[in-house]
Length: 296
Image 1: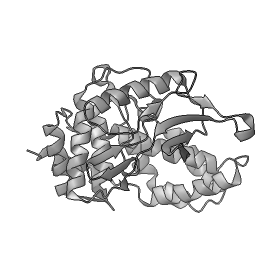
Image 2: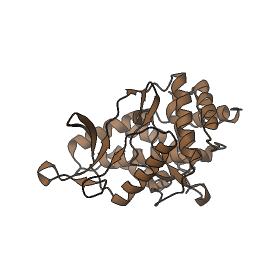
Image 3: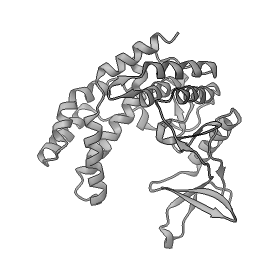
Image 4: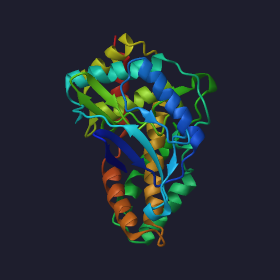
């Protein structure tokens, strides 16, 4: 949750975390963000607390959670279908990857480990037994889920560089000067090719249809901005597959947990219904690969 804070006519963003945070990870993310800023990638500034740390605990009377302070930035939501946005997106990602910043810290398993086939079958049985309305959707998607899971392998060590790992439309603002990249909390070691593939999927595929023109504009700008990653085969979709599958699994387990907060369980039901109803077919990936292969 992000709060807008005004102090002596200056504006700040205060991000409140509802999960465990690590100062070492925050420092690595801040260093990567600052390096990217030196290459022209615009984003809110990281601000330290009075003790020099980025993470600061709230008083127990205010909830006791960890918060971080950033400069406030103004901007409008982006339109992924805008040709100018597609080009600016490619430039932004190309500048990030062109840094080839050495990987620092451990790679989050979220991006390269997914549940085993037996776990998916167990979740499917439990959902059906509980009479969940999303259970038929999960059963229908089970074969696609298992097929997709086979693409998810650990990132080869030589491919790992620092990546943002969450370049989605909701984390980008636009103003007259271009794009502003938000939410660097997931930044860490990743594969630039897998991140590029994930970005193309997230920005240029709607209802199973690939926006060919948008993909080519993004790729062209990416190359001009020194982006060197290549999406060569289905293995490059491993990051996108891992994040999708892990998200579905986490929401399913939350929904099936009788001890979880009722509001969280209800939100999980809605998220599952939405995600499973839009679960991508293999054709989406092959269509996107076909467009990428002809980018030149």
